[in-house]
Length: 333
Image (tube, rainbow, N blue to C red; front, side, top):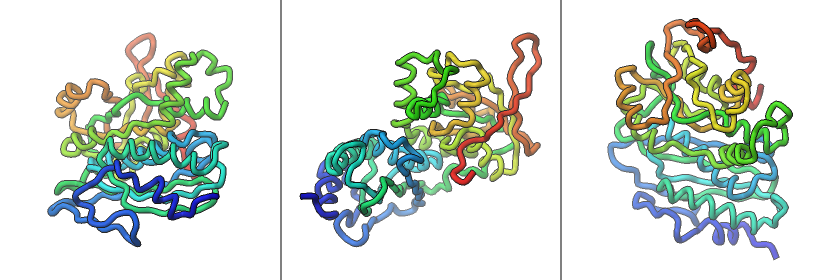
């Protein structure tokens, strides 16, 4: 006998071991949640919906679905330099998901969800469950202490453009998961493929880095739709342009065996990396680099409102201009 909606909520989303925040007055089990925010603090909110077959392959394991659904929202908080506090969950479920009964799927999903929530000190305070095609909507909120946070509109001419880690693994992971890896990707080892799929399913939300950067970076965004697309949002909002040095882009290990142009295109347009892209004054870069050796400065903000891509020539001291045919993922493109 299948359980009712309220029995499912009680069984899988009222975990006594989940985060228990002192600023929550009333949580799961009533019509609304009630919170008592800190005085003299701003609140940041973000919401994302993940749909099976659109945001993740239909056979993605439930623990990966849960992890990614929360991680991509945490990444939005990270891009603003916000501290996670609470989240709500709206979950639409079919009877059978990933060839397993609903309750078996929910057990794996909820365990992974609460594990990541505990890691970041964020508490589930409410939501909704319905029956239908698999879809997950999470809204997160967090604190900005007397700060407007990092915004897309703050980039300044001569700022350095920095990314927090390697790019392209998740995009390659999607190709592998969808069995789109043709002969040009035959050079990838089994380990490369496994790491790429892991990057797709378990993105690292750069929350700690965002908190440390929010008083240093002039602008920031998380890389969800591809570096070119997301950097483009910063450029548009700030009314500036950029020059990127392709040889400085940190490529994921799973792209190492590809020719450079193919690897650059995947890294620039593939998306799902959830690294941060931010801009800061050149004088601040040495201290940030000393704290975060894996960060990479890949370009500079310019007054001319265009985005130029170039790479050092293999012979000589000149630079070669590059054109990338696509900019990144667009739901309505």
